[in-house]
Every structure is written in C-alpha cells, then in structure tokens.
Amino acid sequence: MEKGEINFFSENDFVLQKENDFRNWVDQVIESENKYVGDINFIFCDDEYLNDINVKYLSHDTYTDIISFDNSIGNTLHGDIFISIDRVEENSSNFKVDFIEELKRVVIHGVLHFCGYKDKSERDQELMRRKEEEKMKLFHVEQ
Image (cartoon, rainbow, N blue to C red; front, side, top):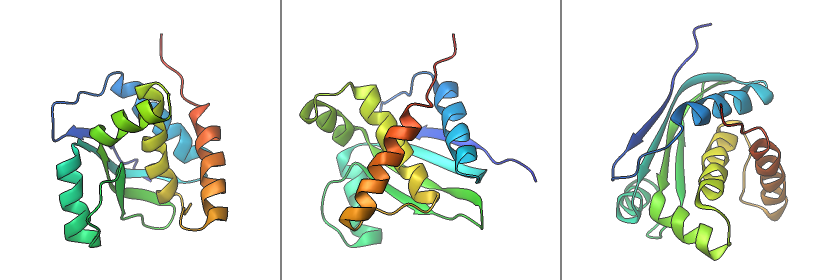
C-alpha cells in the first residue's frame, strides 16, 4: 500500500517549527493505533477563518480551536484538520501550559478523531484525554 502524505499549511503568518518532528510523530501515533497514513492536511489559521468554516459547514457560530474533516477510507486516514492558532494561544495561557504543548494536544486530538475516538459524551471525553496524554509522550525531537 502506498503511503500518503502529512502536510502542514498556513492561512496566516504562523510557521510550524520542527515540521519533520511533527510529521514523524503523527505517523507514529497513527501506526500505534493500527491505522495507515493517507493524505492528511493540517491547516493553521486564525479565529475568523475557522469560525467561517464552522458557520458554513457545521452551522455553529462559535470560536473553536479545531475542526476536522475526516475522509478516511477503512483503516487509511485521510482528511483536513483546521487549527486556530488564536485559540491555541489563548488556551495555552488559560491552562498555563506551553504553546507548543497545547498545539501538540490539538494536533493529536484531530488525528485521534480520524482514528475513531469521539468527544461528545463525558465518557468519550475522558478516553480522548487519556489517549491525548498517551500520544503526547510519543513526541520526540530529533537532535
């Protein structure tokens, strides 16, 4: 099976540092869930950009940190993950965590949705949080 690509795009001035480290990590997380990497696009944007998507496609007029569109086929993960850098910055401040740690949590949250994890019920949210913690530990920066 031909492996897909993990891509990072920006609709604002945000530049993801250590892109290859993020790519390798996402790849590792997907493998750890016994899934395959298809084409996955991460699109970094601002609040207004993501709110427009939220209104247009989900009929929600609220700010959010992430919206994921899952186009997976079987166990091969495909899709687009839109992340508001504005929300990540505010959440990192509110939760008193490093910006990159919060960004990693949001990135992997989207990937976990593609793996089949939900977050609508309290029980699903607890499992999602446990999975986020577990997968965050897999992130390693290449020296």
